[in-house]
Length: 401
Image (cartoon, rainbow, N blue to C red; front, side, top):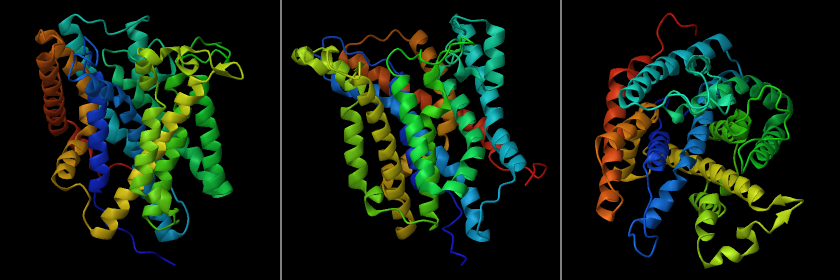
């Protein structure tokens, strides 16, 4: 039986979450040191919170799974099965994302060269550039953070998740969502545990001297699957249990993810609690420092929180006709619509701010650095969106359909 589709327009709740993710990543890249510690610096704990900003990337990953699978899932509602024109799928993703990415590479290189910053670390510029153009840079430790813009690593990871989508759909058709998710969970958990700490999975034969295994797409595959699963529920193809559609569940998992995160343990290790076995590295599980799997589970808990939050917000928007969040939600959605551009450009923008203004780390300076960092990242990102990205959002007539 054909089901009624939700409105095909943009989901404000998804744009809100994009905005949160973009601001979180910007917060992480603004220097947040607070000399004097928590007893002397009024923004110490806010700086500690900003260090969690890297978790904006997993949120982007879950959102990506939602958005990529949305069109395919709509087709299943209409026809009863998954039908994907892979040529159209891939050409659309390339047209939508690659030209702004190329423009951001040029922007990042011009800024780095203009400021006298090194654009390549431990490698060759020509190889670095080629690896980025082919979206293979995230597979190597040498080039993942190259071309003067370390944020580019996740774009290679996203591209490989798009490739894994070609495998995901046949798996869902053959094994169903439950078994597919279990396999994805085991792969992602193993990848996170074995690439934690030093950042290199020495168990893998290093035949090609790749390194940088923590940047590979398998680490995020389960989270990307969750985003696709959220679409199935949103369109009524499946019915998810109430707990994974609850804001309280999202809050609980978010808290668990924060408490199990390495940032918190690094902070506690600098207090009088540092003698505890779990903080001193004296507590192990099967010969592995217990913090390694604990951090991995904490990051997966945060990803599950993102999944629950997407379900909660999209359910509310479907049932109410408007998104939760009020004026703050509208503002975040505005940021979210330009989030790709903000993500692409914020690293060189913050680099220019660091070179252009000598701002210290006293409380007043700390506040000024963050106000300017957020403001300039949003303004430049939005300008990049208006000048470049928005022209590639609509599918041209000549692309395959």
